[in-house]
Image: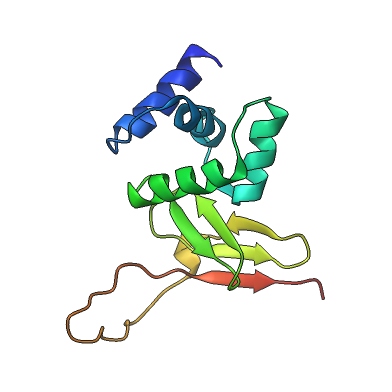
Length: 138
């Protein structure tokens, strides 16, 4: 791990007051160490960790992703009732879901416009709007 990647990972965790355990730092490095945004599922992050010979269980990956989401470092994007992706880019933006490959990518933010959102029921507020545009081959 380069010093700049290590600093980037540590700073990312510290920015949300997430305790930088060894495993969290290792996963943070895979997610943001190079400064690029990522869309990962728990299984793909676990595979990447295994490829780096990091000793991290799939359960730990799931738990860590939940900690990162709860801290506001990532957003969970659900594309099916059983498939979730985790996005390190946390501003509001739409996504393309490529049905043929199972890949999730950012879509142009300026291409989606809302005139209005439905009023939330009494006692609730809109927390976020996720837009996932599903794509398939013609």
